[in-house]
Length: 466
Image (cartoon, rainbow, N blue to C red; front, side, top):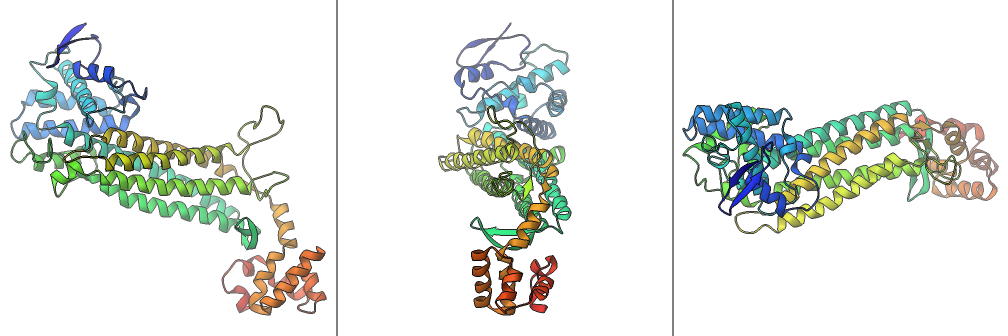
């Protein structure tokens, strides 16, 4: 065991722990979710980029020695490579505006850097968590900058998952392009369309969200790094902000820039609210698509049953042979979670006071869950559902042949009144509309059958041109 102290007193630290006294107190103080920062690997990587950029800037400005800067950079590289993430033991929800996470990072990096120097953990007289790893920084600029980097990384993962899901829907749109079906409004039969058109619309909805998310991602590139405590840059060397931000951009690959007003940027968390709003939009649309997949596959004998979803697992402990739409259902639930997270992020942002928002840990955790869970749900919807969807072609063909919705297509040719008369008689007698139209003297069966084909029923102006 080793002894470490802060201004409150002394704590005994396990010998193999890379964290120290500040982390130990945070573990005692915040037994909240049972999820440590180790569950946020992108945030740990982001902190490593922030601390490495700070070390480079501090070395350039003479705030730390070359030996210290090199050792800190090596320790940061270890974190970036995925090492020592289990040493981030503080809870994701914590008081103090993220100070506990920042100190956890400082201590882990300091002790790993000491190892690189061939020294035991705790030799803070050589390399100190606060004086050297945290040099020219405050939690109040390091933590939100790391959160923005982590969110940027998460957005890239989600964009990739959305693109793959969109591709799966587009592939099905092409496969189903020639298959006629009945389109529905308000759950009632409306007008003909192709199943391919329906799936192409799903792909287009996702493409639109990809565009919005890609545009909004750049809100994460304006950072307050260098502002230290409240944005004034106190305790940072002259010129530090103009050195550290280009370093951070180069190291992380994220095109970060200095916020126009560092004091405003330290207090303002509106960018997180904006990103959360985009995620809520994505969630609401993915949930709508999942609702549609469940409706379209309902039955299979007493429902809509336009399509069949791949059977993924037994659906009941009592009803043999029952298969449920479990993949769209899990997407629905993730979407509900994202919408709830948006409420939490909005409340946390609004509750900020004066020059700092103390509630960024909640925002970061909620954004992490929304981004991560949405990306995973998109992947399972793509692989375990959409790619295996099949069309119930026989049933769709029968419905088209018998559907009175086809008379809507005749409006431009014979007018609303005659079309309505055909529909009324067809519903009352159960006879096909072509036969009814001929019996009413409106149009012969042969003529009608030539009109009621896919390329005329599903393209604007096709029947009018005919």
